[in-house]
Length: 272
Image 1 (tube, one colour):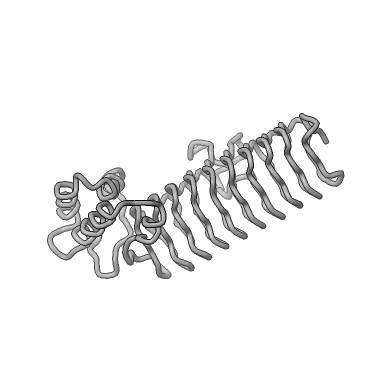
Image 2 (cartoon, rainbow, N blue to C red):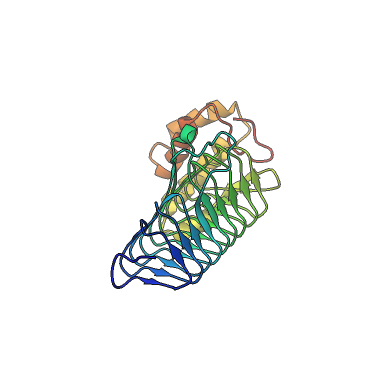
């Protein structure tokens, strides 16, 4: 066991590889295991029974609770032990039994998690995912591989996102919802197979969005998921009519970015 500065506290029962890099004021609790390629930022706390392995970097002021396992190898049959990484940002709270895996060579080699987020009990970030800042994963929320989650997104308890899907920023996924397609920014999805049920308006109000932006986004949503013409035609209509409404244009840009992918639709909506 080793600490790189005098203010780092390591419990006698913890196993910390001498090659691990520990910042200032790090606290490593009972029965934790820290591997040789791990870097812990300043004031990181490992409460107890935490395993940090692989090439894993944890940002400053992150708190990790009992039985979390970060940096384990990807659950991918093509992975043959190549050197891949997990990078976690700052000021995160990672609760009990959370798992986050390193990337795969075919997926870019890095799983990235942002900052200022809450990962509740037993939530999971799979290989090659990119997770933004200020997100909330409720209990048992699960990402498949290669998923992208935007800033301020909220994933409800027992929800699951299929591999390669994109979750837009400020989106909200209801509990026990299975997401098989991309979810637009600001969208709300529920159902055993996700359907779009509106916009995360309360979330926008809480985060200080102005009434003009909110009302403009609501009007754009009604046009985009209306029953006139094709979805592609409605998308172009929104792009023309709501060019001065930034949130509406963010939705347009999100859809255009990967036009070949389907997006989550309202129950009565048309396919993308």
